[in-house]
Length: 299
Length: 334
View (cartoon, each protein chain N blue to C red):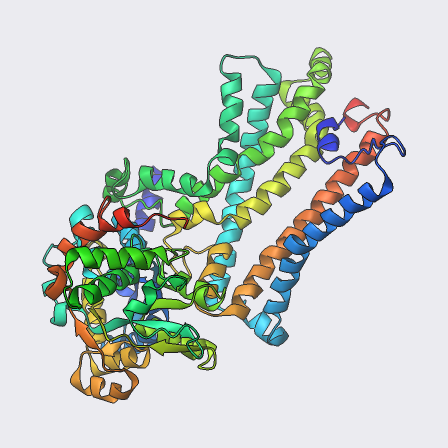
């Protein structure tokens, strides 16, 4: 049912004991290596963030969030994610639908284009918008004349974030929908369901976990994006700084406690994302374990 | 129709609001090390302006490498005033985006630079490498930290100070100066994009034996991290750095902020502004303020950019533009 996710996250374990010929010490060596690597590159930095943030106690930690500039950064980040994630949800569904259900010329090209934001450096993504909307850019004079601000303002930050995060939902859905095929939908249609009914009752329930999974990843990236946003932000304190940019500013101002305190927000977000992701995977696994139970749509 | 009139009413309301509510915001786009200076100065100016006119002014700040900041203003970052590291960067704004007249530097006293600074060395406590002057920086094995002259104003002052030192040596010519600066940059392991990035590289990450730095930035690092960790070395000769300030005419006129923007910059020259500059380790221009902070600043033999390089325009063209001397002598990754 949710084959692609399950495969990718290797939640359905296919390892059979004794099936591999390696001796136990290879196994333990590999485990030790992985753990060592994780400790060095993940656990230690994560612990460092919280230690530094709490170096001067809880009061200093909490005071970091009452700074108006920090609050503005948090608000802007939430706003950006609140726009970018729903947009990408709709786009991702539409793109996955188009690619999985229809055959058309240029389908492979479209697939490649969806992957583009993964392939290009985020800095380039930001620069594209400067080239387009900057005062010296293609649309710059027109925008200036009509007093429309795109870059160095909220719209530019949202645009850059949407661009960087748009593959997440689509990429989760496409393989799943391709695998599922359209039999269930055709059945629904032939039984007299309308297009919308089919979508709400058959398509959406079939992809909901993959969709949620994509949304979680998309949201994490939208809130954490640095490079592309940095290029289009203008770094106006209290106005166009998102949380990651604000962390950089605080760090550069030698305000280490506040920098790490605000960074700990992003770390907490990452941990929540991991938890949510695990929950979704667990749900998927549960459904995969009972494939013969009818789904609500089929009842 | 209803929608249209609603929009009109809203627009009228907004317009009326901006006329009556005396709530002004200014955006000051500045370079890296001035963060602390302008945090203090903005608060002082807001008090001054409130007392004088009754209006509330909020000055927003944006900081980064000077060249990068100029680029952002050229690309449409709406700065009412720019306070950058060197005249060349504001020239670029005048030249590329035509947002202010080319003779902007004549509008305020002292080449539009309310404070000056110079370039000194920051070394680790006890000066383990025995760095005393510019020629110690080209010794093999000495690791030198400086930002990227392409994006950082301070780095361009660093570069020109080194060049000027070599020129001023006996038998110094353009060729010897070029060789000297080439040797110096061979000792640079990493170029950050702004002065503050380089400071953190040297201070926090512990890279390098000597950091060529703005005097004010070096003082600030010693203050923040303790005189038990770092010390300042004053070279035999350095450059007089004049960070200029100006109103960005087109932006200020469009936003209707010219009056307050001009008052903001003028206040930098006032006794209060000069005192704040001195307190933040910038050398004040006003004789009284200069006297107050006299002891703080070491006496250095200074040359000017006009004297040795014929001003920023020719220095920029010769050294820092694409394919200029810096591009020819610096090959990264060594």
